[in-house]
Amino acid sequence: MASGSYVSRESVPLELIETIETQSRIPARTRKLQAVELEAKSAEDEEKADGEAGEAEIACSTSSRATQSTQLRRTTGSKPLVVDVQAPRATASRPLVVDAQVPPPLQRHRTWLNPLVISLVCVIVGAGILTAAAVMQRPGQASVVSFIGGQVYSVQVGGSLAGTWQSNQPLPPKVPITPHVGPYSVVGKPTITAAFINKVLAAYNSPAAGKGQALYDLGVQYGIDPVFALAFFMHESSFGTMGEARSSLSLGNLRCIPNFECRDGYAWFPTWEAGFKAWYALIRNLYVADWGLTTVEQIIPRYAPPSDNNNDSAYISAVEHAIDTWRAGYVYP
Image 1 (tube, rainbow, N blue to C red):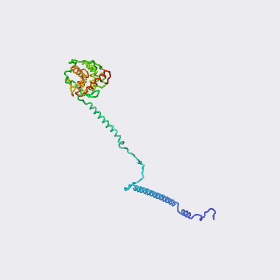
Image 2: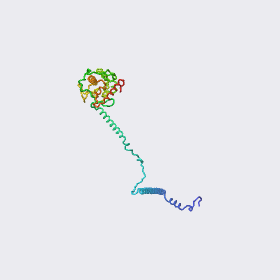
Image 3: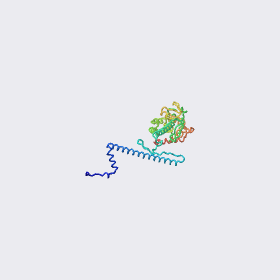
Image 4: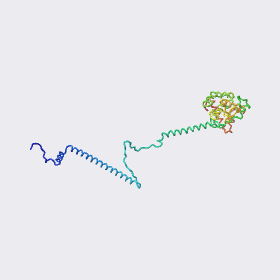
């Protein structure tokens, strides 16, 4: 026997010997194919195991939903309520929105509701202003607004007697004129200046502003203190800003008289100066020269008679108060 290290056949396991002998008889290429087949089979076994596990999970989920449906049926009484409980699924393209709050209708339409409401309010206010302006511009029936006391006086002057007083010059008195020492006799020299008259007319935005010199000169011509003409002008038409005088250019709202246009029962004059002159002629030639009336207390009851629903005492007080204020140098009574 040769010398060396040898393993005895009897000491090696029989299974290992058979495997070694089998592999020694199979070519190398065939052995590789068998290894690949074994790997494929192993992969198929793993996929099968995964599929069985997935089916088991689905069965458990279905059983759980069935249990929940059964419980809901028991709690709803005679009418079973079946609710399919499913877990929310979120996709990558559309995120899941939870508790989304819808704004109220007013908030959603505020973009066009606010301009609409504002426009309606403006239209209503504008209509009210236009209506008030139309009422104020409407000509009255032989009436004007008093500056003090807010009453309306329907003026009655001697229009039918125009032939007895209408003259370009003062007429001689037909009755004796009793002199009055008091402060409210219309006969006398001016107690205010033409500049002060212009200041008053401008302060009240009178359309006759700037005519102070004409009002002053005509008073001197007829012997009437122009402060009385200014007081009557204020109380008859608020210096030509209200009533018929805005168009008739009449200081005292004279009734229709010869030589002048007649509208609505009133005399319409071409200029403010013509209206001033007619008033001075009326007071000087009719009230003073014909009737002998020289004071405010005597003239006003005939100028605005109580029979025509006039408050003579309020009218007299207003005129006298204005005269006192202007003679003291104040513009506003």
